[in-house]
Image (cartoon, rainbow, N blue to C red; front, side):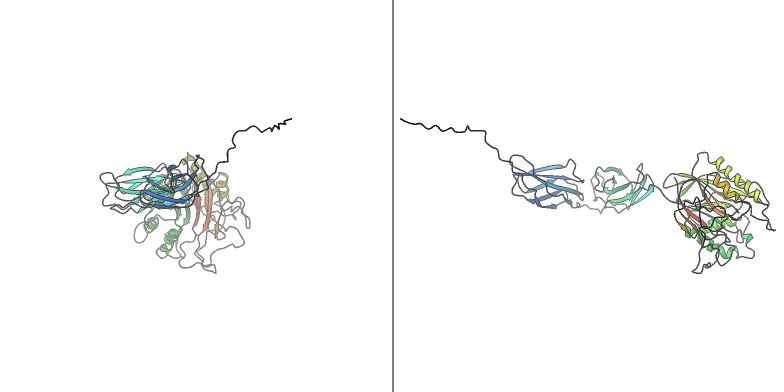
Length: 492
């Protein structure tokens, strides 16, 4: 009997696909830049083709792509003297992309032009503007100014100007900008390369240096150094502190030897860019405001006589605009009635109280826009006066604060102080024309009749200005029987 062996064979299924081979990332990418092109080579023999991605910004967003089937690519259409970012992507035969190479940075060569690129100086002229200046290029009919918020000059805004200067306005305060300039010929084509990119920031805030100085009137110098012998030292003291605005007291309006008045002599010796708000004799007696006209602009001014004591007293004020920020502030300077009469009694306490109230009224009346306030002067009242330091209390209660916190009879403490850095604040502002400077080393603050009151604002520094040796004695000529006081403030 014939036996038949039947073998059951499995049915054939669909073919199994092999996993795609993903090419490795290219290595050893090199770039040979020219002025308007670059030759790129790399190692990666395992891929079927490659795509070169290039951009003038990093990270590469929507980069330009150049495809090639060899490990070399020529990228054209580049800008001279420009930084680019480049990477290479491999691709398999079936179109699968592999990992890209590391990003390579290169800069194209500057084009050859008949004129050298301009040397540009950039200055922040305000919180929202930059000024550019450069030497005239002999072949130039005009210039292109390029501005960007990116160091790679991405999305640069380009403007054309005829003269070798430009102002970039309506910028954002506290922002870094990058600028470059090139010269164009009469046909509008470049005759120079772009200048090196300049990095300049618009300021967010600008410090304001304010001061107060009782300069000792010329006819008050009996028994002390004459005005002629000390005016040089006094002017150098002011210059050394570089104030934007300073209030002077006892700047006599009487005629001095040599002609003019004491306050005119001070301003003349300070020289440019210092100006006085009001040069009229009698306008504010011996109380005057002097300012640096390069940094602040005088907007308004005025003077008012105070309630009378034994002598006529005044307050003078001004509204200024800080040129770099465009911000305005109210500045007042005054000199109240002296503390005591010749017998030592405090009979003028109530006079000073009325005068301080008048100062507050002057500020409120002439500052309707509620600008930041700086009120300086010789208030002729200290924390040791009895029954109180009335002018101090009146100013503080009106919202005009002492950054030193030099409250009544305080010694080691400074309640309410908000100054950030103190310089010689333990020295008294009234030196009595003694060679040994009056110092209270165990106190935070000295005994001061002179003040810098401010409305709410940052005060980064406060200094009682004394030129002393290691033993605490004044060096050279003592400029006045008061020490200048100076603060660095920041308008809110």
